[in-house]
Image (cartoon, rainbow over all chains, first blue to last red; front, side):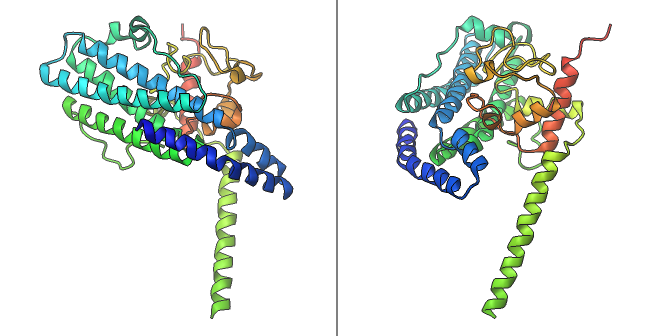
Length: 195
Length: 136
């Protein structure tokens, strides 16, 4: 995953000249408002770095939430094993995102303290048993899946769009398994994620 | 036959282009009426990955956002662009922001787009309701 993200960044650098050429061509045709918009959100790689950093913040939060759940003493052995497995996926996402951000010249956001995540996620008031841990994890996974889908149109680099889709698929898989563990019904309508 | 085929394609393309342009202008001109209860569910699905009503997380806390100056949630580290923004969040600005935040405020760090105008209107109705002072 890390290598793919970095490769995607190189691909983006390779095609950026083409994008700028397109902007110039539009300018020559006189549609300056479109060219202006493209300069802001199509031709600026810093936007992609910003999106990746928001994603990294999500991954830091997910890793912390699973860690808090794992150390809570509330999880049965089988559930704990799944939580650790999912946390490992999020650590993989985190490492890949950090590699991509750094390769693009950005500075990865750092993880916050455990106490901060406990407060921000209101864990002391909302998590009392195993089901509460699973519900929190399911909520975060659904939010992450939708976040990764929602940023796809904003990425300048098509490789990052594809990676974002793959990350969303991981989160959606986690959501589905957690939903099953909670014994809740699946949505009856299609297009469960995104919008 | 070839000429007829090309003409048919051209007409079809024009009809499609007009339809798309018309749909776009509708989205910009008329915002659907929002439903706050439906918006609560959409908020949970679409926004809660990064946001909470009462706590800053990956994004700023949202209670009170409607009517608040952009970039002014206490103790949240905004992008320079949003911190310098000079407008208030209302239905129009929130709709533009949710549709494409990086175009609405170039330099913003939120890239999440919500393409469905009805869902945007529902979320805006929800945020407006949650921003109102509690009834005494």
